[in-house]
Length: 254
Image 1 (cartoon, rainbow, N blue to C red):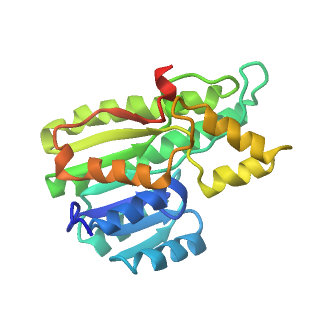
Image 2 (tube, rainbow, N blue to C red):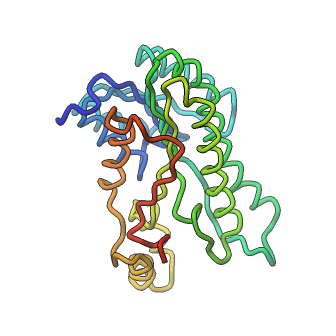
Image 3 (tube, rainbow, N blue to C red):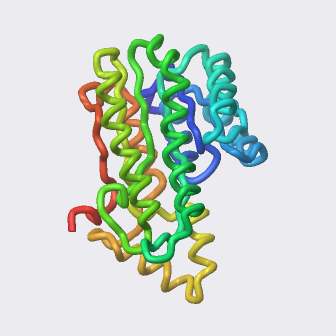
């Protein structure tokens, strides 16, 4: 354990799987106490059991698009952690949405499941963050929030919207010792991403294409996402706020 986050109190939405869990695990190894939330209680329980072998962790399931669930989860986290000074929001939805034939309901689903969790999580944890005096908010966006992609009008729009929210919230909080930043990953081989690839006609070709889209010709690693989040949560990044940090193998530089 490096101890860079010793004593930090982190509430992580979407912390049961994928990038969210990788961030939780990295933070636990650095000494943070954790509270995880997500939709599926069984997945959260499994995650908490693994994390409890490293440090202190608890969970509460909920829908991060519903204000009443976010209020309840925030209160439970505040009680378990005795305060919140680190907030991570790893939530969102994707899908094909061409401007030529996208269904408005599908567009709205992607918007709601990407933008609402980012807004609600910070909105209802604001009192705890202010009470902590020094705090860090980390929201997962995407490299597609920085650049466009064909047939992803909703996803690109939602992830770009997250970045806009991060910049605005960073200014609201700036004089209160609270920093707000976004992580913008490229393609990372999470369990869900691999499952999606397996549904393709040629799964190996689909995975290879995703890996090779980066200038560094490979997929991002979960531990790389966790390490960046640890830095943003630590006091070493005390002068960084309002940033959208691409960790995408150079994809957004092309």
